[in-house]
Length: 311
Image (cartoon, rainbow, N blue to C red; front, side, top):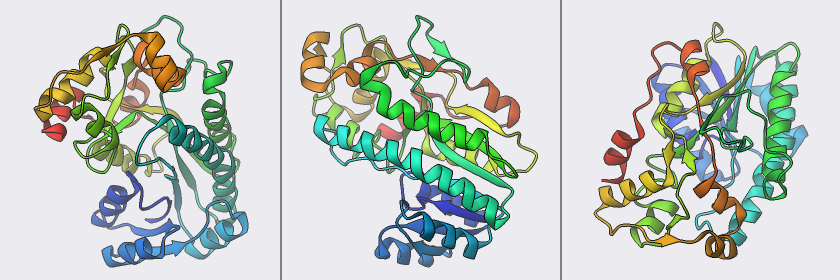
């Protein structure tokens, strides 16, 4: 199969290229960095240096690639998740979702591709007291601190869902952990946990749904199949982890001291309302729809995965 992969050098893009090539697919990957393009070519992929916001250049690249499937894995995350850096990253990521996904859908249709798979996120639903949400839970669009991020997801998923003459799959990944992600010993959050700079806020009831990056790669490869139904899917493990559980588990696996505790008012003042939401009110996500569509997909349990990754 010939696959056009936008964002081929990111946290999931790199292992996804490796897996696609290992499975015998032809890969055309995009990057903004000529040095990373050389690294893609060294692996055996074709590489295109392109600005994802340049719609004409993207159309030309997809047309030249003649792909059967177009995969969107474009993100922009800072190395150090300070409040200022995160605010800038949220704006860029929202723009990537709003602008580049509709462009790729149009380019895929024009090039004769049969399917578009786009990276979405699962942690955008409105807290309503239920500990776990499925894909039909409403997006949290009426919360000012969430609106930019969630609106980007809404536009992305609408572009995929409403695509004509091309199949659309929106993958709502959970929080990636594993090599090359924030949730690793050398990752941004792993470093903060090791240095006791990532406390348990308030009750620690916020439930994060994780997915090992290799399990996310496997899920994405399964969605390439023409028999896989179009739609929106949570791609997570099936055990959402409260912050009061997963933060100490990561610290313990690294041999670090137990995390500190912080009151909600202090966390809100220093880190902002989004961090407080993730720590205290974030609903987990149910992955039953994806498991039904992809029998045999079995992501590792987060406790086992954390023991493997953070050790």
